[in-house]
Amino acid sequence: MRPPPTFATLPSGLKLHYRVQGTPGAPWMVLLNGLLSDTTMWSGVLPGLSDRFRILTFDSRGQGKSEAPPEGPYPTALLAAEAWELFRVLNITRPWLIGLSNGSAMSLELLSAHPEAFPGAVLTSAMPRFDFALSLKAEHWAHCLEAGGPLMQFDAVAPFLWGDRFLEARHGVLRAYHQIVTGGDKPQHGNLHQSRGTQGWDIRDRLARIQAPVLLLSGAEDLLTPPWKCLETAQGIRGSRFEVVPGIGHAYPVENPKAFVTRVRQFVAGAQSGLADPEI
Image (cartoon, rainbow, N blue to C red; front, side):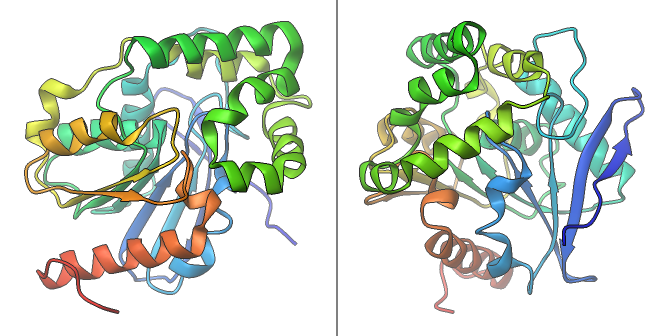
């Protein structure tokens, strides 16, 4: 039985839904959601990380159980600033950042704004900006939600989010999950404000500020944030590591959580020991 939801109130008065799991006293790790999702996207990852880390999952404004103010859009930089406020409210210090897609964008904002606050990060599908093509896709998905609801939005989004085999095998389950996460009695403006808040986001001129070790993972079958665009992020972060994962689309932590956890644990152990990449 899942515990009742917990909420933190930021200095602005905004209430964010969060959950702390894992091992008390262990290093902190924060998992940052992508768009059109909530904390449940990490369910396959948590069992493999909880024994070594104290883990924070949370919904940004407009996501999941968190509040969705009617005024929008919600810029990516604002979501990152509110994540930082949440860390302070919960007294979370020096957490590892694990991000997917817009969660990776939020992580880049945090890493560049607070270079000494984080021991490192593993970021999946991390482009350094929302370029014209990506902005067109995001706006199209927003229009689909307005015109036909969550299922029409899913049908527009799905081919871009997962690798071919994963999508074909799990299509029905993924479609139902999307309707649960974004539909029901949830206010649709939160979804729309998050999507439209990505427009114009660009962190290329601040990547050089990042000091922490960063592993950037990119799915070989990712049609939304393809490897050649994510490579630009790695090129802007001194000492970062960039890897392309065969057979994976946009959402590595969802498509193959066990392999993802193994790579996260390897990288963190290597950074903690000062080695490039130890075998564990």
